[in-house]
Image (cartoon, rainbow, N blue to C red; front, side, top):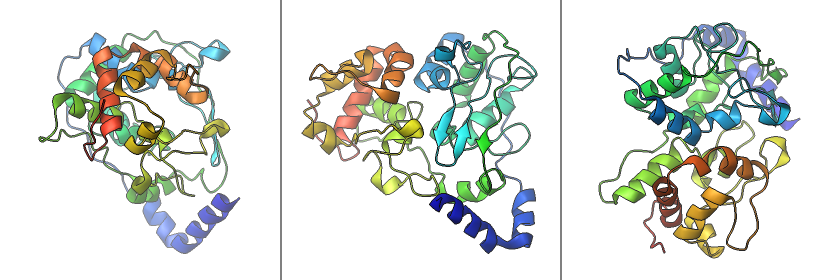
Length: 301
């Protein structure tokens, strides 16, 4: 209810003239042409690491891979991950690689409308042209499924998609995946994965009433995830307090088992089952190294 009141108040402040201006205001930048040849295997690996398959596949309901995912039940409404198969009508079969690039890196569809941030495009903004080409090559191998995903079930005022242009201006943050020269290759690889494709901060960072990440509290946990689950803090201090090590955290990302013998539950169990267990041991260790040392460069073991 507080979110609805907040949204209504925002619309009132903007006013009718402001609404019209924002509604017709173009968003995003024209993507540069991508003529690179993509590698299917690299693209499939990146798609796994990025959560594309786990989010856009409703396996529990008997759905096909990437034909549309299970609904995300949030305080703003229910979002349905769309069909990403090669079907030209219900999937992305009629897209160009440039439209795909804009969708992945900027969160803007071929129709020019911004996507809801339930799609974690902000974490993919630093994907290189080669990574986009690899992803595109992999998606071209997905069999077409002629099943449309349901429309999002989002009430007023959040169904006014133009309002996302304002949201993006306030809450869109750089993913901070660039290498830091003073740090080693493993730490930098972990930083790129955690802050980029693995998008750990999407779940493990608290959000404000508008759904924006409280970036100053990054990795401190989130008790209001879709479906009512929660994500614990994964700061270096929190992990150290729980006696995680690089070895045990890397193993947990492969097996879903904690040092105490418990198993991950909820959405993290799905992340391991569909995403991180398919990653290389080196990449899982790199993620663990970065998380346990943090940006401050704490000593890891």
